[in-house]
Amino acid sequence: MQNKSNLSRREFLKIAGAGLGSLALTANACVSAGASSNEELPLEEHWALLYDATQCSGCRECERACKAYNKLPEENVDDLSGNTFTLIKLYQSEDGAQKSFRKYQCMHCVDPACAASCPVGALHKIENGPVVYDAYKCIGCRYCMQACAFGVPRYDWSLAYPFIRKCEMCYHREAGPACADICPKQALLFGRRGDLLEIAKMRISVNPGKYFEDRVYGEFEGGGTSVLILSGVPFEAIGLPGLDPQPLPDRTQWALNIVPAIFFGVGGAMSAVYQRTKNKTSTPEEEVKS
Ligand code: SF4
Ligand code: SF4
Ligand code: SF4
Image (tube, rainbow, N blue to C red; front, side, top):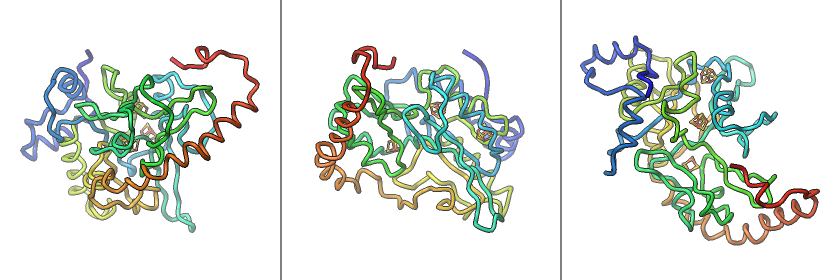
């Protein structure tokens, strides 16, 4: 296992100087903690990512690292897809005065609506935080797509037996998420949620006026997320939904009620049309991506 931290030495020293030096901050330690314990971890110990949009240069190294680690083909898309688990988008105001990048990916909600809506437990939150997917359990009902307030789960329509596809926080990767590992700007940090919140608040406190409303998106929104976001522009301006602290599953019962109609109506029809129009040359087994 590599002995590496995703945090800059300067940030570590800043935190140490603030009397928080006892925090265990390495991604390595974070992975170890998540992998070895069978007990429920407190929220502050959960794996998390901190994305600071003000430090993002838009280099898209994170996108490329995600594609490489997850063996996803290149494609020219402007939204998440079955083959694109993360995407950097540039937002700018009409007069061009305000610009900001935003990294899209699964937010790994503290109380994930996708998992709560899944009738067979194909999506579930593992004990150290990532929300992961079991293709063998999935029945293709797409409840999760309706329930997610962030529009994250995607269906891979190119397969005869499609799967839900999304970021799983690289939970199998020894050194933590590939995207955070490669970010050259410290715009994306991986660590324990409690530590990353401390860092985010430290950045806010030492940069007065830099961050929108001096707050961290995801600390409380929708019951909290494990992807935390700092922004210099309003969160809504970079496509983040305004959510109160109520856990999202509490508010998505409506989705459970309408999805059977969607599944057997629009969704079923789309699957049927796709399969009828597709020049099908492969067996279902060949179409299943490993
Ligand atoms: S962002 Fe959506 S897909 Fe990701 S954990 Fe939350 S509800 Fe699930
Ligand atoms: S955590 Fe892993 S799967 Fe998720 S966006 Fe980053 S590299 Fe991609
Ligand atoms: S690698 Fe870092 S700086 Fe580059 S686009 Fe991704 S988050 Fe932004």
